[in-house]
Image (tube, rainbow, N blue to C red; front, side, top):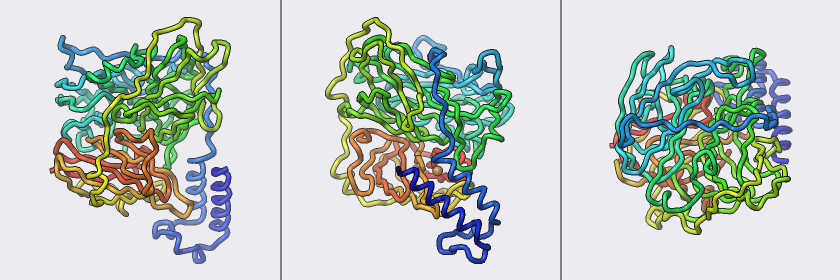
Amino acid sequence: MGIKIKLAAMVISVAVISGCSSGSLPTEKMNHDMMEMGNSAMRNMMKGHMSHDTVVMLNDSTGENELKIPSILESETENGIVYTVRAQKGKTEIFDGTETETYGYNGSFLGPMLRFEEGDKVKIRTINELDEETTFHWHGLEVSADADGGPHDSLKPGEEKVIEFEVTQEAATLWFHPHPLGKTSEQVYKGLAGLIYIEDDNSKSLELPSVYGENDIPLVFQDRIFDDKKQLNYRSAMNEDGTIGNTLLINGTLNPKLTVNKEKVRLRLLNGSNARNFTFKLNTGDSFVQIATDGGFLNEPVTLQEVTLTPAERAEIVIDFSRINTTDEVALINEDGSVLLPFRVSNQSGAISRIPGVMNDFSLTDEEMDLPVTKKVELFGMMHMVTINGKKFNPERIDFTQEQGVTEVWEIYNKPDMMGGMTHPFHIHGAQYKIISRNEEAPPENERGWKDSISVSPDETVKIAIQFKHKGVYMFHCHILEHEDNGMMGQIRVE
Ligand SMILES: [Cu+2]
């Protein structure tokens, strides 16, 4: 319904624009850049923008391939803290009998899972074996800026860098990906993305499903377009407003299915797409519970029929398959009904795990809620004309400063454009933060936990409370990767 209305409005706008001479455009709604564009360029731009929300449907997963589970990266020392992560090129058989050129970490496609414990002092040797510059960014990890892998930290081909940090945050599902200036979208698209699990005493005592790959399943959702030669041709697939594909890969698996026992199964959902939003639900209409946000457990499980994740967001959910008949065809589907992940429920009963009523002690204090807004972020634009506070990224410019260890309230506003605008997923490096409000209302229950990436809808204002544990210069940006590469990014120096 909403989509149809929006589409109709867009078609009208495009018709009006293409029918006008440039002198009679509705100027109050156009910014200067647009005024300088010709009609056909404008029309093409609109087409790209329209396709973002609507046109590219995902193919249903046929379920012919069992889901691949990323390997766990073993430490090189006995006390479990020294790792090597290489960015490399490779060839991957995504389609039977065809080799697709891909990128990966410690392999040809995607990456392994790194498992840390709170309190670990971790050392990672990062090596760039690509033919181009890259960086190693640890998304959601609270580390000092020199270990964060932002665009300043570029490694040339053949270079390596050792980073060290202490894990000072609670149990969570994080991830890592490249962040080179202007090249993030292409490198992620080709396959650079891996997972980080943090465990702590709390997560180990909760008795949640935690057998990796059996009832504790990582799911990295990425949509792609393959050309006639079954290659990931980023240049031809690329959309300035966010590249959206018709082919879903989960953990790099085409047409995946997941076989589960009759037990509670924990799914760690990561939207690892360049731009596509997912709304996950069960085709049976059954509910599930969400137990964790980006940066940790919710205080209590939240029962949901569906959960939406914009790019880079994570959610951990638990589905109780002991209640589902093995004859039922059950699948995780997207909002539009496309089948993402069919399940095969075996006759075997699995572990009896429970979902505890209390999982965490996350709190948003009155003091934090009463703080004045001290940083304002205005997200605006589309295609290559995306800005934050009216500006494009400039590596020489520091946009904000904040004191280490001091909580501030940021207000993030998504200013609609002439087309109504689009949702921008907003990410801040180096910290987990709390949502105070969405349009002055308390956030939904499943967002009352640590976040590092949030959706911001057109005309929406989101207030967050954020504190940085470490010093240095960090990025904040839209996590539609093409928007990030197009300059929808700023820098904060924590002093
Ligand atoms: Cu954006």
